[in-house]
Image (cartoon, rainbow, N blue to C red; front, side, top):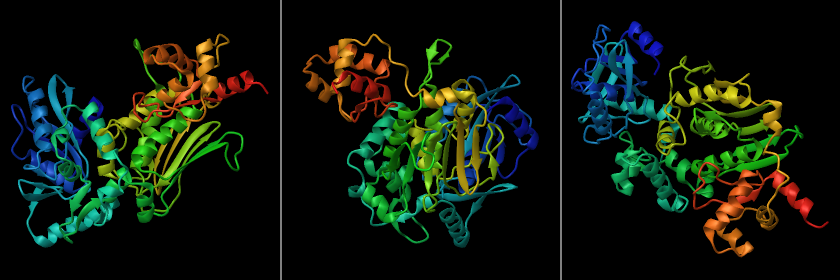
Length: 481
């Protein structure tokens, strides 16, 4: 959060979506009651180190890190917040004082703090005691987030083999100290919100979010017959398409397919930030694709499209808007349309925290393609338009250098379809893996003759390699007619 935003919040004062708390040496006792109330209402921001009157008194510098760690640990403790909801505090230097900002999104579930339900009003937090009032919160949540729909007859056998373990491994790699890493399989499903019990009906089971994240294609189609994503390339044939990927798989695999489709048809421009090389294509389109998948209203049959034109990439899907208009960095309040899906994507590092991802796209788009015309539009359809200039749209891969080594030529001639490294080594009869990597695989990748099918996960056990358009041209040129 930027200093200007903090200043605006302090001037605005406390309200239904903003709470100030003094926390000079420790977390105040009422902190998690406010967290619970925000989760149950419309979300909000908590500023630690600010008095009720808006005076910034700061958090003791020697206690900031401890308080942040305590906050994160306790927020994921089911004995405090049920269901647990992991929070990510942000330390802010404001006018010589240390403040801690905590963004609490609206949750798709009803939460309790110390066994009690809290809700939020303009006057602050209040405990909800009446059964009817608690039931109304459940009804409000169920109508707001269709991802929480329970499917009592959905079982793990309906999930793609190994996909749950894959997701948990990604969490472990990206967040080694994440509390979820210590949970049993069933506890992981419950704490993450993928398996729940509806207190209003008594039904228990996996949710629509779990089905979308992990489900086999046939299981998803049985629940959502209209579900699919059309990825199209329309540079020459604007009536139909130049290339197409019809995606009906779960969201974990759909993300990988869309990233591969993007890598196939858009270049990865060389870019240095300081002395570090960065992949602008991965940074920009990771956020575009994750937003595209996370913010879709999956019970709506409006077609989801991901289309690369000559001068723009445009994605559209069905949406349940919280705001109508253009989303600009720092000028909108982040609101998760599917909080459970968003939470999983954040934990496996395929999305940023709410609002941060859009800032990144705006930050790097000018370096990638000039930046004119970038749009994130919230409405009945969620729409993203990423500008592509003529060079970006046509320079799919770098030009092939005339000096192609015999090893690189050999791998190009041998490669048919999508092949694993072991399959390629076997075809070329090379036993030394390191020699194959250095003399064959790496040079061919760097020359733009071949590409990975999962570019954002180079070490994936499911990694395959295929020829690029430039590689295909070289192969046709070398093969006898």
